[in-house]
Length: 249
Ligand code: 13P
Image 1 (cartoon, protein in one colour):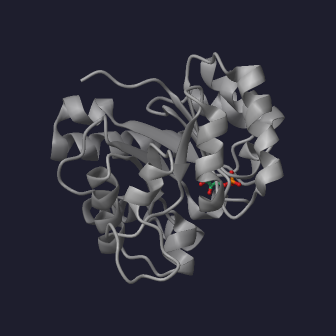
Image 2 (cartoon, helix red, strand yellow; image 1 turned 60 degrees about the horizontal axis):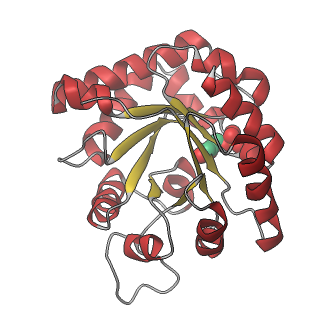
């Protein structure tokens, strides 16, 4: 299976009101014909208006979904609802969800299956804390998260893995290129042992954590890095545009 186009994904987290949609218009103006795929995951309130604004140039995704399609779950949103609002992607297992909402690997797995059932491509996030890295546990943490949260049935069409070291998120600290390479190589190898080389090669592996226009080229030059999941720097079209340009090479 052939690998898909490289992916520049923005995660707006809990940021953005409707007047922020102007950033999408600016991004389409500057990078609408980019050769890589561009995705923005805005807060749920902006999924439908952003999908209407973005047309076919920029994909839109949710930041989380419930494991069930509907039911008595006040405040939650289902993958089916995201799809209905115009999303084609959903993020699962972000470390902020794992930390703030106690999401286990098992819960992330169920949400990922729900995303697939609704026809969404899932960006599943994994990554170690600083304590785990300093204890030399990075690869075993990654192994545990992959085994626990990636369901059977993964393909290059339905799954993207984002490696986001928790200590690099929003901190301005970025792992060395050697550290990124070690983890991304390990993820590819682990996927290949479980799903076969063809599938493992087709699944895109994103790096996330303090990616900025100034460090993006160096990160994208690392083997097995197929794009980025960007938080803060995805909020402004200028910054995100710089990262997209770096990904295009
Ligand atoms: P920052 O790019 O703000 O560090 O956030 C990364 C992230 O968590 C993306 O999901």
